[in-house]
Length: 332
Length: 250
Image (cartoon, rainbow over the protein chains, first blue to last red):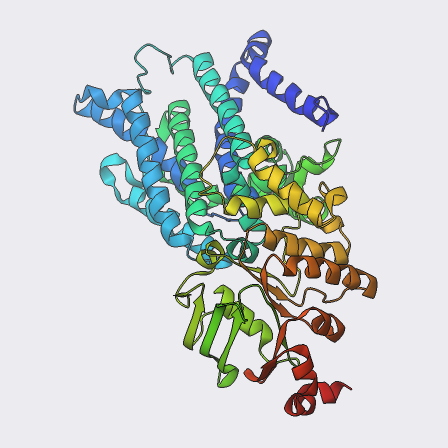
């Protein structure tokens, strides 16, 4: 692969655009898009980590949004106690971050250890069931708002290193986090570990025959993906100033999978393209000012989105990636 | 003078819903020999291979390899003590290149794979042994091709290369010539003849010319049971074998 293929240039141009975005929106005098793009990038972090499981590992985890919720609830609960009970250290962003990473890893360990003993549809159902358990747990805890969720009155305190209340600072924390996750994935997938993950998707029987026990490697991938998504949840809570159980609902996990499918499964940049496309379509379709027989089409935008997704799956198996010039980047 | 036994199968039993796929089967494979298993379809040849690799569990009996019982060992564990197999139906990593297929097998035997950072594409410890193996098999020109792009004959060859990359003591070859053109299988016979001196081989094969020209000893399997074991000449002259198997084909 040449270094400057059209595909690489397009990817680079997209990253540059994202890097300059806060300044571009400044020029337009409207910072709305900085917030929207922050959200896109956070979801892209989650989707990119999920792509390790689905795209490279063939493990269709249908409960990935649970980790988003976990990270977000830790920020929310920390802020809640800091403000209600005056426990200041719970607002400390580093403590919150450490708690997020440790808790997401532990939860992923437990869910993965059990789910990975199953295959196919059973794996999908079990991961979804675990995520729904967490969802209903969040619904049930009245202290933290239950169904209504929890407004976060104070963002994580990063002790002066970075001010999360400043929109630009938060954006760049998110942007560079995304870049870091992208690079991490690139290294992971190409490493010995990545070879085992990809090989186990490609042909598990042969993997066992040549001496690999895929389980422990899959479990490790599961933990890595869960932890990264927990981190995305930490960012999401700081962006939204709000956390609610609906963040963990299974349909949110479904959204993440749709983003990966839209962007092109098993492709490093796929989840980013997919997330952008998903959010853009949601925005666009839901603002269609068309009313048919008293039914507002924009309100039921999924009616259009659904068939669109079916078309992608049927005719563009690699999603948006199919439309990029040059040969498809081989999983390496 | 005969070599010591590398593999001893003792009264092995495998049942499938009342059907005895392996019926009290006993035989042994000597160190360094090429031992062929022949028998009509449904004789339980592949079932036997799967029990030797640990892919499926036996119901009774014992398997000794290199002096130790292995019936309770998992499939990956058996690979690590030196048992490798090729598959009757090609079983490779289709979305990997030829070189990467072999590299993965090399990697499996270089300790754990919890190495997250370094690109395998730059690891000489993986690439070099894999390339050497491909050279040895005469496949160096296809190294960077995707498996999906190979001819059937080349895929069958790669099957064996992947097995060899695990540095086995014992090679279990499950119909390596299945579906091959006569030209390709002639080529493969030459490769097997070379491998013979370096590995102990259990060969399952329907191509009788190949079997009788390569094997040191042959065991004839009928309905999961060994009805005869002997040199190719002894098997050719065995009345029971002629009746049960060879005669039918002639």
